[in-house]
Length: 352
Image (cartoon, rainbow, N blue to C red; front, side, top):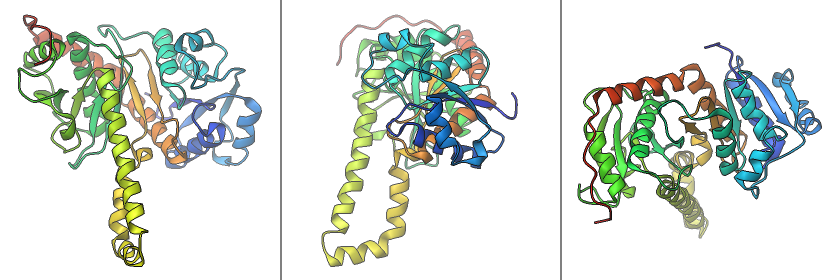
């Protein structure tokens, strides 16, 4: 891998548009001056923002007439792949002009364009959206799928587990990731038929650099007891939104409590360092950058509401997975898993 990777940026995506995206690009360049960028979108708007950041003034700019909005359906977005800033960034990866694409735009549209343009890797039925979540342990936890696939069968879940473990080893440096399936209980009899079948298949794994530790409930995901949590996209997205909402609730509740009286304000001054640490841990911008795993190319999704620091973090993720060749690692792990796996008998459908 070239030590100076070029990242394709959808400069029009996200709530802040070019101003936030270009500011994030500049921050990423400040952290790693070897990075190079191609910016897709309204050329006039992009160049107006570039004038503020001399460190990225030499970035390539590709004018695009269309912008994919949050209201666009995936089918509508696909038809504008060649004319939109989102589509242009992904096509740059397909054509080998960039090692990864970063967008803060419509998630469904991004998934649809990426899947159609890049196709899934050999041996992968469906790509999955994976993100890092903060925990009480020494490492973050990889969680997937977070919304790319609402319905998944057992084989999909197994593929997600293999991909998530590979990402955990690369992104977090975990030598032997602990993998668990998100379920309504930890007992073997709990859950849907798909979950039981996936668990049976994963238990057959006898080699490789990861291990399957059974089921996990949502309230234990961030306790530091697991490295990879696997779910269908429907349940995973609900769990993610619940966690993010709880984090905002706690932050807002503390702010209200500390401003309720003079005594509370004095208490805040004494506890400010601890509160700052808590705010940093709960701020989604500090864990920004979800990855579409299983495609023949790297695509990173930034939060639509991310600030410049959040965008820079998403770019950091893109550069890291490109340099460490995540796609090859997933391919190797999948081949290793299938060489050791034994196909189990299907379980009965239903939830117990």
